[in-house]
Image (cartoon, rainbow, N blue to C red; front, side, top):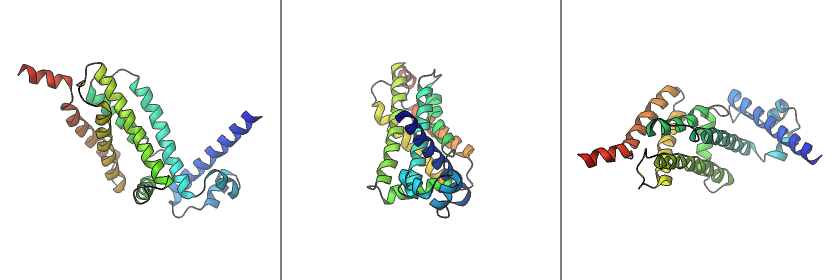
Length: 213
């Protein structure tokens, strides 16, 4: 019975999050009420508050869900074969941005970023930046894999390189969500170019060519 209750709770939580994501996207964050979310999820308003303390808590849960899902995809990607470091690193970061609008709109990301930046020490801010930290950590894991197969220099700090690459994608993503009409293709083009530039200074091949020169 305990297992059944836990599954039921998890199911209600998923339903509430799905309803929140749908209504936030349709009506906007400010114009969506908890009552409307409860109605769409077919639960009582009190039930929503049993799972989430506020609309802000719901928004953070959607950010966390995005992070969990992209990290799972990233883990599978890292375990695969990689033709070259620039393509591999761009491929991982592209997973992050391609998934970004599954649960959240640009407007919701702007709300989330603003809340995290203005309330950095709040549970929301702490959760938001922890999500970023975990993504940067995963990029560092791919850097370490590429070092191990000889594609990247072995004398660089993989974690620091991962953090720097995540800063690149995060900065570009902020520009993307700030401009409502900016297409994702433009974001991809900028990301690919900047990752290639970054990797050019880290590749083992570049180091070998310099030594020969």
